[in-house]
Length: 201
Ligand SMILES: [Cu+2]
Image (cartoon, rainbow, N blue to C red; front, side, top):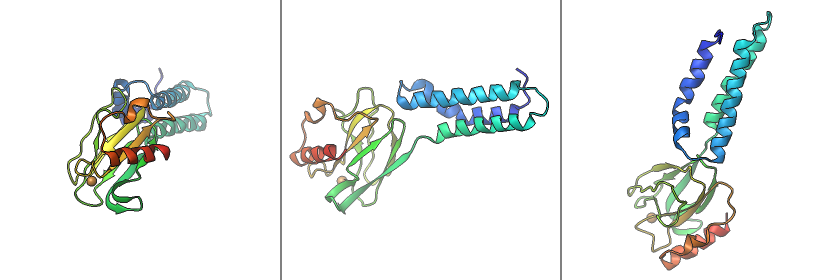
C-alpha cells in the first residue's frame, strides 16, 4: 500500500495496542463487538485516505485520516469508570456501599473509594458470572476493578458483611439476576440488602 500517512497510522496503532491485546484475550462481549466495528471503520478510512491519489484531494485525505484517528480514540475512550463510596454512614444507613446498586457496561471500571476507614471491597465467589475474575481489596484500600464478563456481581465488605454491607453490580443489559444469585449462605441483613439493591436496578 502506498503510504503517505505513516504517522497517523503509527499513532493510532501504538495507542490501541494495549487495548487490542486485552481485546484478543477477552471473551466475546458487546463492548468487544463495538470496538471491533470502530476499529474496522477506522481501518477502512485509513485505507481510503492512503489509496486516494487524485490530485487536489489533499483536504479530503486529511479529513479521512482525522476521522480514523477520532474513531480509534473514541473506541479507546468508550469504557467508563464509576465510583462507589465505602461509608460508615450514608443516606442508606450505616456501613454501606454508595450506591448499593450499579449498572455498567462490559469493560467499564468500578473504583471503590475508601471514603471512610475500616472497609474493603471484595467479590463473592458464588455471586458472579462464570469465568469472571475474583477481586479482593485490602482494608482501607481504594481499588479499581474492570468487569468484562456480563452478569451480576455481589460485592461485600468483609468486616461488615454481617451488618449487610453489600452491593450489586450488573454488567450488561441482563434484566434479572440468575435464580441462584441469592441461594448461597448469606447473613440475614446482607440478603435483605441484596434484595433491595436488585430491585433498584
Ligand atoms: Cu465495611
